[in-house]
Amino acid sequence: MDVEVPTRTVVEALVRPDGTVDAGELYDVAGALGMSDQQVRLCLKRLVAEGKFSQDGRGRRAVLRMTPEALRAAEPDVEFVRFMYRQDAGEVTWDGVWHLVAFGVPESQRPARDALRDAIVRFGGAALHGGLYVSPHDWEELVEGEASRLGVAASVTFLTSADLRVGAERDPAALAARLWPLAEVAARHERLAEVARVRLRLLGEEPDRTALLRIAVEVAAEFTRAVEPDPLLPPELLPQPWAGARARALVARCWAALARRSDELPALFQTYTGVIRSDVV
Image (cartoon, rainbow, N blue to C red; front, side, top):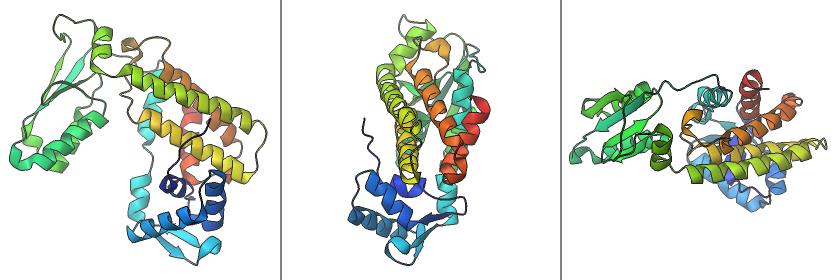
């Protein structure tokens, strides 16, 4: 099964612990993913123009250096990954409390209002009504931090309830199925599971370095595609067995196989293997 990987993602994925990217290795891995040299060159030109990388040398002999600001922005959310695996393992249980956020940001601050709404959805919130969102997780600190950054903290209200009802429905699992697009989230994880199964077989064949990096990039790209829209609902609110937990278990096996050669992997994958290996494998 092929995985669609943006060229920019390949560049950022191959950043080594010292913040550099070997251009020769980049061109080799991109080529293995079906990308042309011209495609890579154009991407590098854009990244340099955006101030995310500097470049020393030309062509395959070049060395790219990620700027400190770009390095910080590209750091994976380790706690997010650790939380999802702990929850899958049953180490995090739901207390039955719903966490609600309401905001009434005036039209004069529309960009901030839109950005806050996007952040709330990104944090896994589901809309109940206009300006009112719910999550089963204790997310107040995250939402308040984003509201403060946007300068609209005074327009945000927080509340909790153990008795949420939408229309006549109050069963928690039925509410979750109504409020979140669980079928779409599950479909993304089914695809992730298939990608991980195929890559596990390839890892068993002891691939060379270019093939190893290609596998790592593909798994990471599909993992991101699956988990970014996932609200990470507690197991108590999900159909069982849940596709997300199955897929993430397969990904953990991929990272375990990659960890055997972790000295050959870029910084991103060393971080992933460290977090997942310590909590799951």
